Image (cartoon, rainbow, N blue to C red; front, side, top):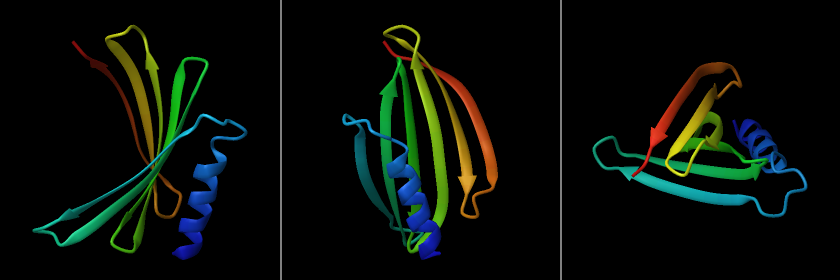
Length: 103
């Protein structure tokens, strides 16, 4: 399990390549009723107008997988996005394609 987390972290950090302006974030939350602690490590980088991101997640001490995403701003108010979810054994889990409006 620790090896998978280390490999995923290395892949997420390597995702940025030689880019120097990558966005990094770490988040955590505690679910009171479920008594679980979830942590996420996200790295993202904009390249040619498309924002690429990778998020590795853990629930308590169990690695749960990684989400790879792309977001493209069509206009100032419209975004197109896709996300690919990979499980804790690096198997394909789900793909999502969508859009968002903001005003």
